[in-house]
Image 1: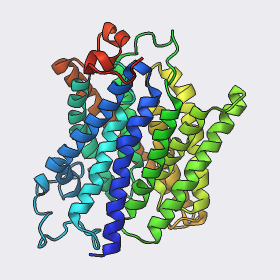
Image 2: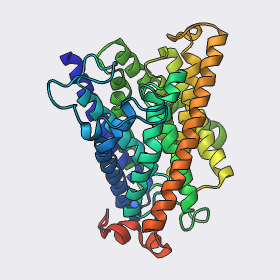
Image 3: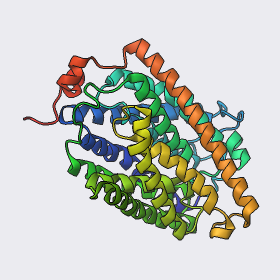
Length: 409
């Protein structure tokens, strides 16, 4: 064990958990309308907690132990064999940190992925049914995708797909799952006829800032060591985020006449999404381009594609994470090339090959996450009733579902 590496991954684990709580809870809470604030926050909390527990019960084993190309094995159920001094790591990549720490770090990735989906179905989904949906989608969607991309014998991993910290596993999968769940659930009462603006941009900005800080652990910790690659990931994370802020603001200025705080926040998150699969694999200059291009792709996803699809994706999870994640995954294949400053082989042929492999990973993740989300939404709806009643929506799910209020007035 290397104590420096252990310390860095421990800190990174805490930073990623900061993204869930309080980061994403505040981020989504600010985007919600006043009478749905606590409902949104409680769903982030519940989904994060449930996914973490299921990860330790069986999720880790089904992702990071040998099995088939689509799913791992059963040898690490309940983290069996990970918590005694005599245990040996089962993964070759763990040469300086305990496997239990790696499992803990990866648990936070599973938690944030499941929590992200709640933003698509916010303000009309019931708490208990959301937890049922989370358990089903985690099992049917997240675990197979994570194994295929990151598992020692995963299908996409064997093809050579690159995903440094979760562009396909976290962002594409959550964005597409959110889109399917939102489509299944239907639009919020009054959608398209009344304003549904965020009730607190200061709260939203606070959550975004915490997400941004946590993202340094998300990407930097994925090096699994305190080394040069971790430093590169940190630098690229910062550069992509600030590029995303400016790119989104520029797009709004050009097409709407003025930039907005909400747009700048969204641009920063989009830049972070875009650099996630590439963080430790591309040059800093490429990170700037990835952040800006991903932000512009997300602008289209939020303002163009969303209208075409006609889906009430409440907090634009698909536009930012789904479209942004796909853009980042493909751009990773481009800038990984040695001809563009990356560590990969130089030349047009290898570049085209890598982009094609990235495209395959995007399509597989998209289709798998979508099918799993449809099954999970249908099952949760028929078991518990996923959709709140119109009367409950009008009252606000804070009171109707939780019996609480975020504000006294």
